[in-house]
Length: 276
Image (spheres, rainbow, N blue to C red):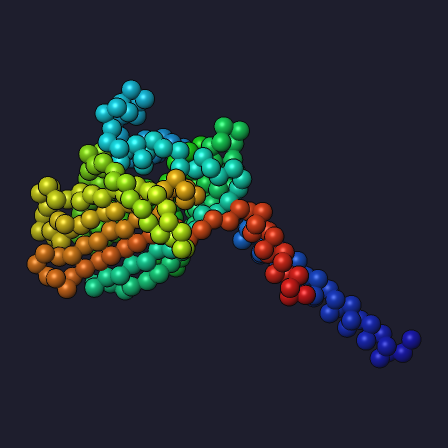
C-alpha cells in the first residue's frame, strides 16, 4: 500500500474519531440539560420551609384560625397532580423607571417523586447577573415558586433601600396571614380557568423610614388555579411612588407550561432524528 493510500485511510479514521467524540459530547450536553443535577446533600426540607414562611406555629389545630390565603399558599398540596419527573416553566418580566428592564425564565424541576407523592425539587431562577441561587428542596407538597419570588423581592428591596430583607419578608408573611382569597376567572392560551386571587399591600399600615417610603402602596397579587400544574399561574408586584408618578416598578412571574422528562427526551430524540 503506497504512502498516499495509507494517509487517506488514516485521515478517514481520524475524521470518524472526531465525529464520534463530537456526537458523544453533544449527546452528553443535551442529556445534561434534560437530566437535572441530583445533588440533594444540602437540600432544604420543603414543608418545614413553607411552614416557617406561613405561620409562627404550624399545627393542624390552627387551621381554623388561618386566613384562606394562608391555607391556599401554605397548606394546599399544589404538586399533587404531578405524578412523574417534570419541569414547570415560568416567564419573569421586570419593568422599572429606575433600573434596566429585562425578561427571563424560571424553571421548577421536579427531579424525583417519593412513595408518599412528595417531591425532590431543584430550581433555575433567571440567568446572568439577575440569577438567584436557591438550594434544592426535598419532601415538597406545595409549589415553592411563590416563596422564591417573595424572597428575591425582599432581597431586592434590601439592595435598593439599605433596609433589612427580614423586615420585608416578615411584613409579607404577616399580611398574608390576615388576607382572604377572591374567586376569579382568567384566560390562558385561549382557555378559561377558574381560580383564586390573593391581593395584599404589606406596608400600608407600617411606619416606614423615608428611604423605603416609595414602597408604602406596593401591591402583591397572586393568581392560582387547581387546573394549572403547580397551581401558581401568576405573581405580580406593582409600585408607584406617591410623590413621583413617573417612578414605577412592575414585576411579573407567569406560568408558561409544563413538560414531563419523558416528553423532553422524546422532543430531543425527534430533533436529533430530524437533523440527521
